[in-house]
Image (cartoon, rainbow, N blue to C red; front, side):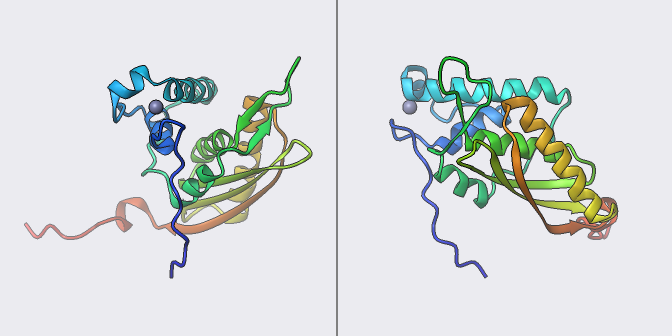
Length: 194
Ligand SMILES: [Zn+2]
């Protein structure tokens, strides 16, 4: 039963939906309002930052990532706290930070690359000591042992985040929310009755 408070979609200073921009960049969607984006400095700055983060990620991912079925409510919740930033380790001559949203997206992409993982949502929380805590929730194929799956997820996610943003993952809680049975037989195998 959902007793979840209505999340307020985060917006940029210009009033545009930040989530829409994240999806635009991460999923390669066309802009919802190209005319506005072309002349809005808030949108352009946000897009530039998101692009830089996702390009770095794509380079390292080295493979096509599975298209997710849209961002979950948990990511929305994450976006609501967008102001929180994670300190990047390699800052020289100033503080470099990366948004928790970006850290979550990187973690999510990394998790989707783990075998048997079908669907992922991640919430990240920056810590005073510069590390980051992650709450990773997945849907996975039934097959590999779930403790092994959690181990592989922790490994891959924390190493990707270390590589990409130089941040130490201090804690990863992995929750397997659901499992899918054999894809071919379980999903929508309704008789067509021809
Ligand atoms: Zn704008």
